[in-house]
Image 1 (cartoon, one colour):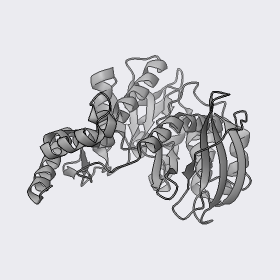
Image 2 (cartoon, rainbow, N blue to C red; image 1 turned 135 degrees about the horizontal axis):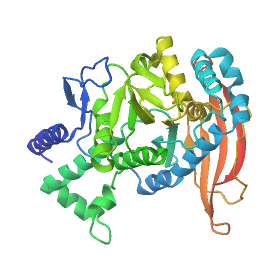
Image 3 (cartoon, helix red, strand yellow; image 1 turned 90 degrees about the vertical axis):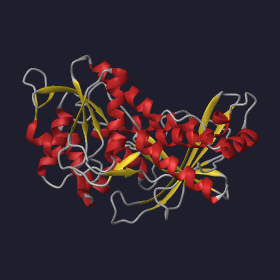
Length: 388
């Protein structure tokens, strides 16, 4: 491509981003419902980054099992106690979350309905050709909306440039001639996030109730959040309220006739956390009081504090940990590598398809070296084979 073609695509990309909400705020507001007044396009690549198709397919295929594993761990009280015992003595943040879990009733206090909007992060390990799983996020997952917009923008730019369209059509078209699905697969993360939250709202049983999105004060990633809220209303008829934890402490309460979550005297049947995942989200007792109030309510949580704790357990396994809720199998080949941090030794998930048993399988082997001063710091190892 010539320099003039690149400049033209750059200008087209910025224009498209501005028109479709592919933006981030450059200032914020302490009030959750307030909108930023200054914003710019999100950091984006002009064209998509090449990534092996088979590796991408593998990551997608195993994603539901990581979600299932997170849910199972979150519901295993004894395992949570075993894994967190040492951490609770040294990490104030995890200890405070655990206290919220206990004060809200532990497993018995959980709503029978819960939502999980999870995100698995990967990097490609070039020597092995395997995806390197950095983590599975169980709380405050983000960029479903903006990543969807990036895919749409890339498709727009490819078709907008005759040079690119010709290149992609010649190099990557499948047997149907659809180079989009062959080279730029659909991204439906925004749609699925809204569908998940809407399903929780429907299951809660009160169509007049609202959904409460817990956000940070001075939020910069507001467009990623508001695109979800807009789709919830436009496609599913669910109204969304934005509030910080401090605002929840000031204006939220439980109803006297059933522990429904009331915010400004309006019932909210679903709580979607886009904050509350880090110590900085709880600068005072106000935020912790609000979190406990939410957990004690009948509102459907995404996620519950138990699921949040499960995410920390899976991210920082303790020594000799083996957790396998599935039966064993023998056939193993291929692998997915997982590392808690860039400087950690890898956790290895070996994935295969056993034609005889017609099931997927993992070999879990981990050796994690984590800074003991950081939350969940540990040094561990273990091996287990699991049918999933």
